Image (cartoon, rainbow, N blue to C red):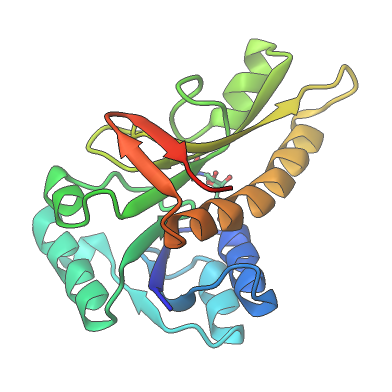
Length: 202
Ligand code: GAR
């Protein structure tokens, strides 16, 4: 089974959804490591409870971003990680890191990319007044919220929605879509051609 590492900076509801899918065996990976950059993140407690090994790596402990990322890469190598799963890790990875794990880093974004990139996608889409938004899982490249799209799922915006109710629905979709996308990747069912990711044999 492949070893995966989840990178998270905050609440960790996606981390938890991945851990539950692993437990249920609908996602057949070994959740070998949580990488976290924020000592106050609630995801750390979730990992402790679920007995997932944690690497807390704080950016301020390093003079340069490269030193910070080199330390993370050392943790990944030590734990034989073959897929990096970004789940609310609120830092942009440098070209150096992306190159080291080329096509082996995925991210989840709470909007239909390329619309509403950035850290406030749900709020931005709601404020814009879109009638449909959704969730995107994609490979990570050097640009923010940009790499080849693996799966997308639409979420309709209802007339009665508040930002909170829309957020809740989007998160529910995230928690289903992310384990599904990871399972497709580890099964070797995603073929990349340029920036198009084709799903084979599903
Ligand atoms: C998720 O909604 C994820 O899509 C978003 O951060 C949240 C983390 O929640 N990521 C981005 O906005 C990336 N641009 P979680 O900590 O509860 O999983």
